[in-house]
Amino acid sequence: MNISKHTLDKALDSASFPVVAALLVHFTGDISILDKLPKPNQAVLGEIQGFLSNQDKKIIKQIALNEIDKFFSNSQIEDLYIPSNEELNEMMDFIVGERVTSDYIPMMLRDLNINSQDSKLNLKNTKSSLEVLIIGAGMSGILAAIKLAERGIKFKIYEKNIDLGGTWYENKYPGSRVDIANHFYSYSFEENHQWSEHFSQQPELLNYFRKCFDKYDIQRHTYFETQVTNMKFDELTKSWDVESICNGNINKEVVNIVISCVGQLNQPKVPEIKDLDEFQGDMFHSAQWPDYDVISGKKVAVVGSGASAFQIVPSIANSCEELTIFQRSPPWMFPNPKYHEEVDEGKKWLLENLPFYSRWYRFLLFYPGSDQLLNSLFIDPAWNERDDSINKENDAMRELFTEAMLMQIYDQSLVEKVIPNYPPFGKRMLQDNGAWLSALHLPNVTLLPEGVECMNAKGIVTSKKELEFDTIIFATGFKAQDFFHPINIDGGSGCFHEIYEDSPKSYLGITFSSIPNFFSMYGPGTNLAHAGSIIFNSECQINYICSALEHMIERNLKKISVKPEIENQYQNSFEKRHSKMVWQHPKVSSWYQNSKGKVVTTSPWRLVEYWNWTNNFNGDEYDF
Image (spheres, rainbow, N blue to C red):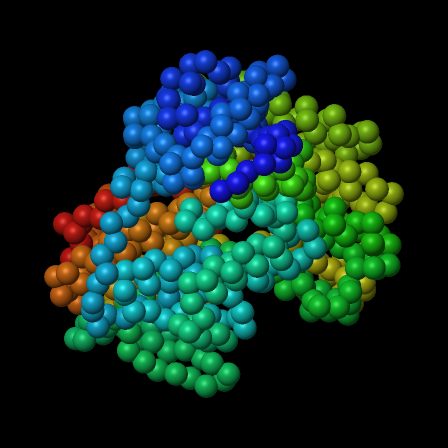
């Protein structure tokens, strides 16, 4: 490998210098070099320079430039030093400016994937007649297919849409993008060094999953426009009788194992509004954006102010004649100037060409965005300072976020409308680069702090007057609590939806005592609102599912279901922890909660807890 010193010199100006410093261990083979370099301070989410001074960065850059150039003048890439696990841990400590505690090290080593002996799964290529039906070809369905194929387990995918991608296929609205840093929001084993933005938009995300789909040859296992409608478990044959619809034809078949990869955000939710069908203009949910122009020069209403509206409004505001936002509750926002920022060419070069840079950069994004926040999300029973915060640390964040918003507001009539009155992190936290509040200041944009109760042929009837619109957009989220909807699932004891309604019981959000031979990815209680990425959680889940399937295959077992007592213990712990957390605070109402106000969608666990549980399948917890 030939790396030009001039090219490296230029690219290093775009580097994360804590990462570059740690890389010198690989290039010199000497862990003690870290003692000779400026030390980063404690890493925080989104800050990739360890608060190093410009002089510190210059020192690291000059040493790195010399050492890396010297290495490639005399050695090949295969000569790079692979540190021991203990040394890798020291490098972790250095990069994040604090001690990475022992309970996190195995998880971080696995994701880092540098020491292949310890970080890669010891895969078993199984031979079995067992076949798995994966429902859904979105992020988790593609992941499940890749990991089953690695193990030689037969599978097929049924996807209701005409194409892959799941949420990244359906949500094509203007401004649609991920709100987790892209160099972490990707499969740990399938990096993309060429993301054009730090938080990429929908077309680029869909293209990433398409490339993975093609690379691992998932196409030949996938049946598009195929909607699973009914599943009934046959205790006699220990298998599922599955009904599906494709092109209007009903298909019936027998399947051994089912993995649901339909997710939580797959059924658009439109509120119950009086005379909704009377409206004569264009009206649609944000996940069902039409192919024709419904914005330019139009009078447009956006109903909702959550994550989708937050992205849509700044993207369409300048194109509308008038834009009116109906907001029941304002969102809290996390200041993030990089939210719409492009990745510069120097950073792309480093990720693509500098050995191990991308792995350590991913670690720097991952670790401070893992569990640091979680303790601040527990309600302090003694806290009585105010009712829009839950403890001292949460209140400090409330002040920080409030000040960040106030600095962007010069129309004082907006202040009461946009500052939330519930604790920070109670609902999904949105990324703030100024675009939302800037849009609200435009002369053609109006923010109404109320929901929509009634409509007519011309538009929306408010408590004060009738407003006429050409287009009404419902950015009102999804039926997140209706798990596996609209599939009718009967595990032998009756319909799952009728038994549990919006209060499902599960073990780890993956298995269910009432549904044998059935696994779920992004199931109940596995949404992440405090840390990590949903891809991280999905990798945990498919690792666990594969371990369960291997357990069955090795022992020639035909049926698996979690023991009811194990499920109950888990569910009780899940509910007990949530009762103490911000997501179930009396002033919070969100899609995390069911009709009784209990959280059913979101995980209360530390990432490392969930990783350990899903990394250690225990057959004693199951009936076979």
